[in-house]
Image (tube, rainbow, N blue to C red; front, side, top):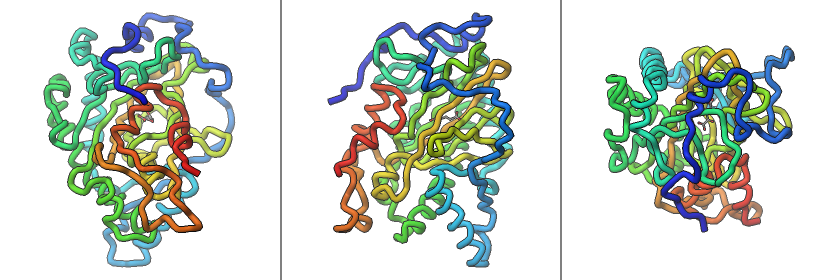
Length: 358
Ligand SMILES: O=C(O)CCC(=O)C(=O)O
C-alpha cells in the first residue's frame, strides 16, 4: 500500500536555478533514457493538431447547432481524449492576467519563492518534482500547486501573496473555470446517453474538488535529452489547460506518435482524466501527454484540475455496466488513486491500466 511521505528523498534543486547556471549541458538526473527522449526541432511539415471546437453556438436557439457541438466534442473525446475550445465564456483579459501574474511569480527572487517550498504531504506550494522515489530521473520544470475546492482545503496562506494580484486573480479564475468545467461535464454526460448531471453527481455534486498546477519550464540547453513533464495521463476528472500563448510544448499521444499541440489564441486545452475513464467504464479514455522544452524560450502553463470529491468511491456508472460490458475497474477514492503519481511520479497510463479488473 502506498503511503504519503513527509519529505522529499533528496535536497530540492530548482530547475530555474539550474537553467540560469548551465551553458551547454544538463545534470545526468534530467537525462531521459533514449526511448523516452523527444525529437525536437524536427523539420516535418506535419500540421496535425487536436480538434478546435467553438462553443459559441451552445447558447444558440438552433438545436442543430447545439447538436453539432455535442457531436464534435464526442468525436474529439473518442478520437483524441483532447480538444481545444474557443468562445468558452471566460474573459480573455482574465486569461492574460492569470498568465502574466504567474510569469511574474516565477521571475521573483528565489528567496521569495522559497517561502512557499512544498512537501510531498500535500504538494501545495512551490515544487520541483513529482514523486518521491530516491534517485528518480527528474523533469525539467518547476511548478506551483494550490487547492481551490473544496473550500475547506482552500488556504490563502498557501497561495503566494506576491505578486499582489495573485490571490484575487486566482479566486476569479477558479470561479470561472469551475463554471466552464461544469458545463463540459454536462455535455460529457449527455454524450454518454445519460442524464446531464450524472457525472457531476458521481463527482460528489456540490463537493467536487478543484486545484491548479502552474508549470514553469525554464530554457534548457539540451532539450533533446530531457522532458519538461514526462508522459502521463491526468489522475483526476478533467483538465482545463491554459497553455503558453507564445511557446508550444505539449505533446499528445496518438497511437505511436507524439503530436505537438498548436495552441489557439485564448483557447483552453481540455482533456479527459482517469476518473472519467473509470466512471464511463472506458467509453472515454484519458490520453497520455508530455511536455518538451526548448533552448530559446521558457514556457508557462496553467493546468486546472476538476476532480471528484476526494473521499468517495469512484467506479463505473451502473448505467454503463452490462453483462456484455462488465465493470472494468474496482471502486477507489481519488485520495487513494492520486497517491500513485504522488509517490512514483508521472508513469504514462500504467496506473489506470493496472487497475483493470478484467
Ligand atoms: O504544460 C503543459 O502543456 C501540460 C501540463 C500537464 O500536462 C499537467 O500539468 O498535467
